[in-house]
Image (cartoon, rainbow, N blue to C red):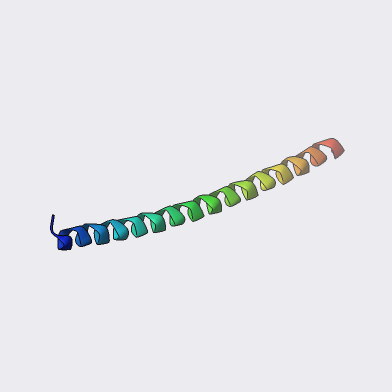
Length: 59
């Protein structure tokens, strides 16, 4: 295999690796944001439950 083809293959591999790394970073970042929002929703449900319990207890 000529050196030019090897160089091109290595360049393509580096480009693909960089692209996949960027995609993985973006996916991980989005998954963290989703988990954060799920935790916020859970906290809101807990607060709603406490409110409903107090309302039913007092009245």
